[in-house]
Image (cartoon, rainbow, N blue to C red; front, top):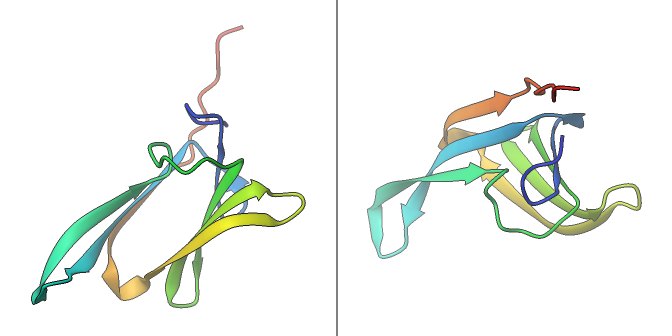
Length: 98
């Protein structure tokens, strides 16, 4: 299903409505401080065709594809598993009325 900005969201290659990942991130000037960050695939501003989120080894991998079939990647982000607070996958595809 395409999100509001016309990108397809996938979790391990399967199309889903949305994926939200909450994770801890170190604050640069405060070595003992963390802030909770959130990645929301629907709200992410990156211009791309597809976003695929996967749990691979010790990372959550977020890959932004310009053209998924050609494997043209805009960028990739890795979030260490030990930083993940919560991961929500909305895989309920909404049926549009006919």
